[in-house]
Image 1 (cartoon, rainbow, N blue to C red):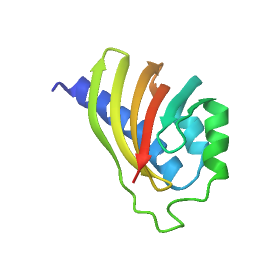
Image 2 (cartoon, helix red, strand yellow):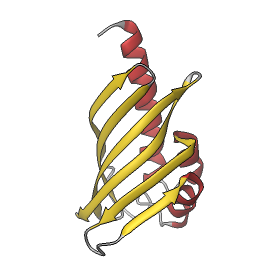
Image 3 (cartoon, rainbow, N blue to C red):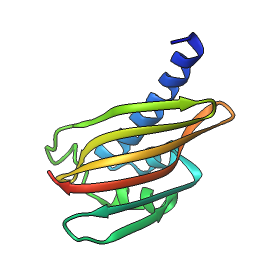
Image 4 (cartoon, rainbow, N blue to C red):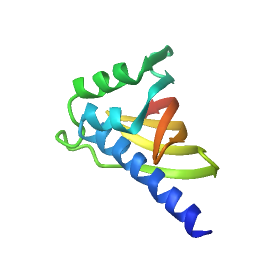
Length: 128
């Protein structure tokens, strides 16, 4: 891996860490900073069977409104499974425990200027 590829990977991992910490600590500000201004979220919860759609602000507000998993004793179990980077676009597959559910997230990221942000999050959740 070249130095440039290593640098880009580290930058993406920082964005993902902000995303993970935002969810684990119910910090909407970290969610907003990790998502692109035009970011969207769409997913399916197998418990309720319904599709949920949100924009960046709606997702940040949702996360902020939840009891912080970190404060409720939920283990920090969020990790990057795979990452594919091509130029200024990337796709991350992450696995995370959040509010008692096991999430599979597919995150599409873009690099605008010097910052990587999540443009789209598509997720599936099962009971943990």
